[in-house]
Every structure is written in C-alpha cells, then in structure tokens.
Image (tube, rainbow, N blue to C red):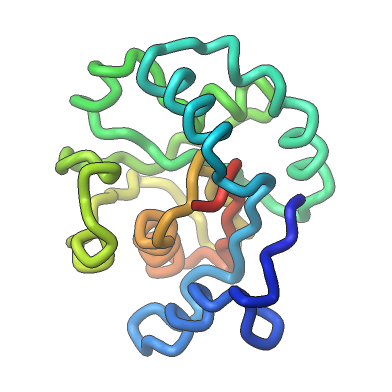
Length: 182
C-alpha cells in the first residue's frame, strides 16, 4: 500500500477523514478507508480502459494484492459498491464486483443504487452534497463487521453514504477498501 505524503495527514488520519470526522452527521460512520494505490495518470488511464471500454482482463493484476488484503482483514461481509441498473447496463459489468471476483473473494451484493448523474461528471462540492443513493435489502447486518469495496476513492461520499445506511441497519463496524485514492 502506498503511503500518503505527510502534507495530507493530520495526526493518525488523512486530512479528508479528519474533515469527515469533524462533521457530526458523519462522525464514526466509516471506521477507515485504505487504498492500495495512488490514483496517478497511469492508473487513471488503466482504470478507464477497464471500466469504460470493458477490458475485463485488466482486473487480473490486482487480484493477488486484493485477495491478500481481504484474507488478513477480520470482517464478516465484503460489499462492492453497486452501480445503478442504468449504469450497469451501459458498462455491462460492475467494476468493483469484477475485481473482487477476480481476487476469488465472494462479494455480498446487499446494496442497490438509485440512478444519478455519473460521479466523474460531478464537482467535489456536488458529490459532497448529494442525497442518499443507496438502499439496503431485507438482510440482517446487525453486529457484523463490513468491508465496502470500490475502485476509486475521490471524496469519500459514496463510501460514507453506504456505510451510514449499514450502520443505521445495525452493522457493528464499517470500513472500506479502494483500489486507488484520487
């Protein structure tokens, strides 16, 4: 895992997490996020090829690292961040689910997502202000330790919305793992 520059760290957490934790509405919702890689120009192009051009085989190089990380984690459920039905139809696959499957990790697809404008088209401010986009099915997550998985961490809004819903449903702890941090 890549370490963040000290310019982006305050105490024991990144500046972004510090901002989220200082907001009463979001404090304690997400225990932590870890990202396996920095989101640089190379990875940006690589993931664009994977996600938007459907080059599914590009998930393979991440499989070993992802599998090792998850096997060492003490979690009950791994949930990939879902796409809306419209976005899933457009792409043909959920990139986060595919990454987990390639790593031989069985994803629990417990969340559904309402359709909204593409995250990549929104400004940071728009992302931070968006309404809840997830829904949790009739499942029992009470007392469970949950790991959310997504491909890219940009503002943390998506992960925190999902975590908030799971915590409200009784999850003991929700943390997240992303392939890359933007």
